[in-house]
Length: 454
Length: 65
Image (cartoon, rainbow over all chains, first blue to last red; front, side):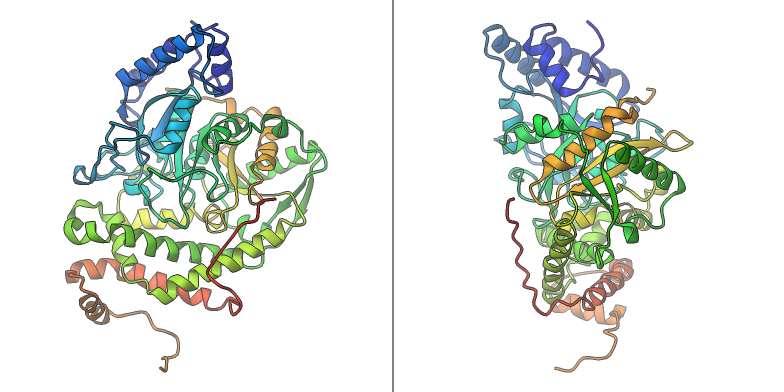
């Protein structure tokens, strides 16, 4: 069988549905690759070998019976271990005391299965998804496939690393301050945070109810659209995504979003704008006057809500948390109700301001992160972890606060071979235009096709 | 109520009182560990107080296009 390790989800689904390859062959190849290479990456916390093989056989039976299950027929998908899969422990990357075994799939997992996807395992994350380094005292650190001495970003670092390494065609992540887009950027894959509320967060361990989003990490923007259609039970947007971007108005918020960048990030993202202009898009400078305040509101909301969720566990088993997460949770206990409501009012104000800016343009384009992947050795101390959260969520958490859809696509590499990501954000519920820009960019660039040497 | 100018960040002693008032048991070591973060959160809240929020309610809705 040809190597489909880096085939897209839509390619695999087409091949399995047309019976040129079986789901069992695809999944066996994935599991074999994980067995050989994941020892050095630690992207999976739980590889569901028997369940995946059984599911693949059922998909093949359905295909042979002339009833391919859906648009993800035979596609191997990994799930961040904060999302429930029936019968498999949900660890949240936490101390074993906090593990639970759910009786039901989260709705997003049920939808993937109904569409023919094969769940191959649960991926590693920052403890309780509360951090961006994926340095984890309970499970060990996930390592970046492009440089194993570096962080994959987080908190969905295992999902991003698994897709980048060719262990699966797609993965689910959660994104509360950038936890899909940051690791997508640092691992060189595509990551989509949909509009707030479009994809169910039921059956997912909460971090912040106001800011939590679920979305896909994939090889391409086209695949992100395919998975979104399944996760949101919406029509497939492939036709809309393929329309090209001639005439689209792309806003560049240079103040705040394009400042203090690593030189390689600035160069690659700048070159990406030139590519989008060559496609016929109009590149326009825009101003979001209070964009720099979005992080303040997001941080206050996150701090208070995360501590509200964890309060009882903190009281009873505070020692079971890693130091950086414990500091974050302890601090949130002291956020006043007045300051929390202040942040929620700022959220209303800033959301209006972002949407107002988007009334004159179709999408906003920014770097996904201020810098490429940082060394893991720098990220184990609590102070360093807290500082990295501040730095790496700078451009992503404004879109959690405002709930706008945002995509990260690979747009280059540093001289040391580390991936760089470009963020494309759009109007509420207009994922199609966001993905359209990402797809047009990927049609004429090959950054998303490059693979790390394992 | 009157307010001191500048809304100074809490000291360790004030934080110990606040923790006890809210029923939390913290060692001095743990409170010391979170003090820098609390000061940062205080600064962030102060920053938000500079926004023109008089007409803003904390409710947010999106309207599908």
